[in-house]
Length: 209
Image 1 (cartoon, rainbow, N blue to C red):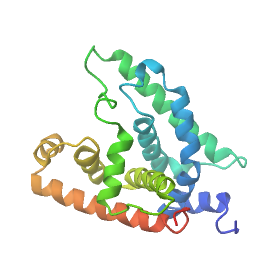
Image 2: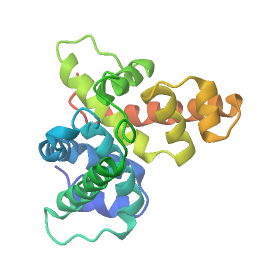
Image 3: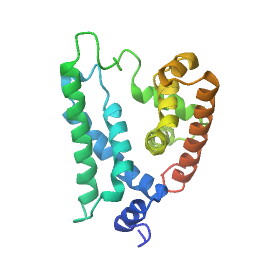
Image 4: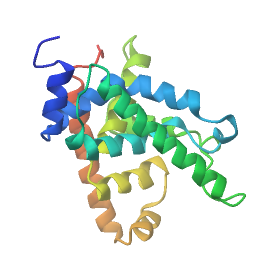
């Protein structure tokens, strides 16, 4: 790895507002943090919450907090991101315990899973892969889209999550966001355009063939 691509250099660039550097950092640690959340997710909560739900909010938090991050050693970034994810998981556990029976968090298992919804968003962006490496490429594209979602402005991210992740009709999204259907269409258009750009950048350093 060149000096320019080293983690300390990427961290410095990300802290200065380089979104591409932040995307690369998060992609490098995505699988490890996802696995950590999956291991720590209580069995009684797994039918109502997916690791991707927790990780999505942790990624948003990381994008917002990176300017304040301080490097202490070579494992600092992973520990920092893992701590954010741990806090988000604890928040979700507390919220579920406080929710009334039948309320609170949605049933992701019944809905087919968060990962399946993001995979459909990947297909919408035209990132299908017919090569022998399709499985790995699909996984990488899903990771990149999830990170891309975290990098979006809040209105664009919320519109895409409600419309394509939760699968709500445009009219319902408009009501939830207190916007017109036309405004929702515009937010989704801009959000999808930004996600497509993220995938284009990511393809330069993912293993896709």
